[in-house]
Image (cartoon, rainbow, N blue to C red; front, side, top):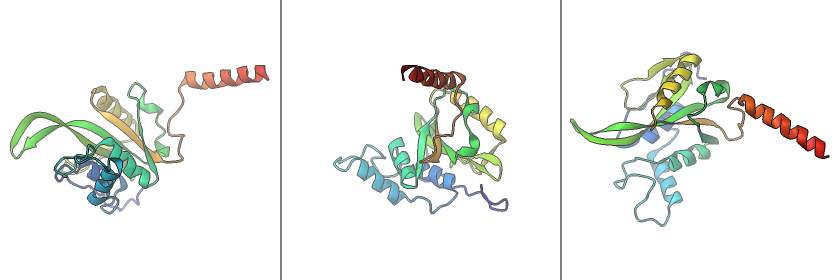
Length: 198
């Protein structure tokens, strides 16, 4: 968590660089990632392709999930897909660095809205005890609120079929989600069967 007097860093949308903005907003620093770094990841993922499948043909951004995951791994983090069939209340928020969502977004050319849906990356983070939506298309960070407000926000967002949530945790962190009741019983039963065979 940042000191209480630290202003919220919020990068605004430029070109098709929403993945870059989402990462920098997540890390609360314009120095966290650079476009050149994400482009280098694209080429490392597909070094022999004339047209790189992990970004826009024009090189303006529009990075896919593989680039985002690799960028986070370079910083010692994992982006783990959250199964929207599970209740967000299973998330152990104190063990989580932040969240990245991939959502459909309206496409605009100047003042003209096009009948197309593009994918858009946004980050969500706890800053000074409050959760914020740091979407680069917003004029300023959008306050979500408390932990319960965040759970309700995720329930609403994940109800929309195209929205995807990724939980960002440190690489060695496997304890960011509570077990379901059945899972704990299954583990206990497996141990009991194993002991019977010994």
